[in-house]
Length: 539
Image (cartoon, rainbow, N blue to C red; front, side, top):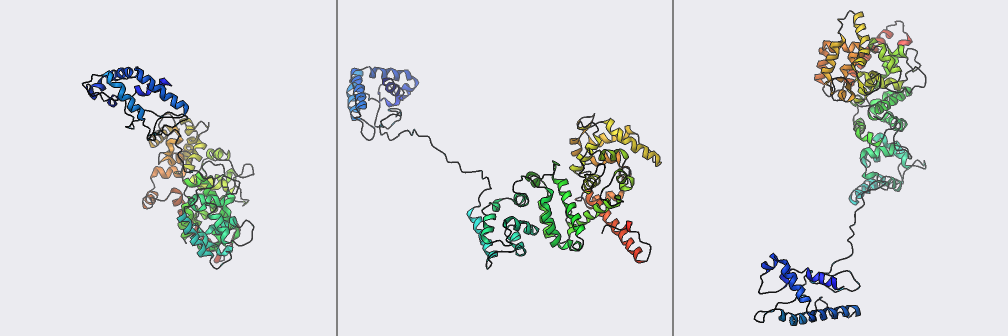
């Protein structure tokens, strides 16, 4: 214990010793002088007795320190001890001042007794309270937002014991800010007992108590549509909202008399959604994929727009009509399946046999059809979307897998030549001037500008706006010829509507053509000409 006290005293600043013979600057420049003076003071007999008395008092618990932490005995003793150390002509220096409150005089150490220093060191660690930042079921709403929502809820439920399903649409749109065609799905999500009525407390418990109020719109829709034990959305999860859309949207009223085509429309919308958004191609749509896509904006658009054909993303009836009619034209026996011979007729025999073989080998995508060697309607939707818009990422990935014969992730000149050989032969048969593969290869590499001069990667294709032309050159003769001739009609279309995709322009052209053909059929049938049922349009 003596060593502890000496250590504390020896660490004092020389300024604390009032020595007239030595200035503070001189002491600071020579700290060893201060240590020698302290050693000399501590070696005096009076100092030893003082230290022993203090230690005895501490052991007995009768410390002579007063409440301010100073000791009168120390002051008195030290005033009597130091004069013998210096000449009488000068003012004797004082021992380290205890009344100054300096923390370097008597450093408080943890122990059973407190010296009562005004600068007492806190030994307990400071516990910082970290606010909760993770909420398993979502962050609770702020009080102000909660009060606003409760006010709106009270307004809608005022005068009602509860709301029935036909009264719930306003609450869905005004309170929840969801598209109106979510009302039935949301109603059944809350009415777990199938009572046919939702009370105010039930609604508050689900919407506010379940923290849906603070979720973003995508998370709200995801939570409402998915099954309780799932962490993804399936195709079946979208059917309920599409049934309500078909029943309530003014642009789809004419389909109410044909339930079969209502079902086909709903299927087509779902297939298009999963084609563009479910990039993992698992059939399980995750919340991350839903947020990254543009489906939420399209849902809001279709809820506000009366003309369904102006909603080009997913919901356009014209787009559905084109897809279904194209499938109907190829499916000659109308068994809702098409084979290789049917598909080879697509686009007036535009595709090569080799690319059709690759499609039916299911390399780009496994068929959902359960009949071997047959392509179902869902498989055809994926095909036509990929064929008619080769600028989209799903399309680039689809055709890249077809051309990548060895599956090593790159397109080599040999692989491209394999597919182009059939194109070259077809050009010769059509008396078209053939273009040698060497020239085509140079054109392709100049067009894409790949990172490696020996092959083309999928990344190279995704960063180039002309990538779709590469696939047209390799297996679609009609589009290859149109590209080579720089069709002025197509160029003008692109300049007039730069925001439209290749699919949007194709669907618009085909819808006009199909409509004109249908008008001609109607006119011929009305004139009493022979009518063949096999040429009837699907609707």
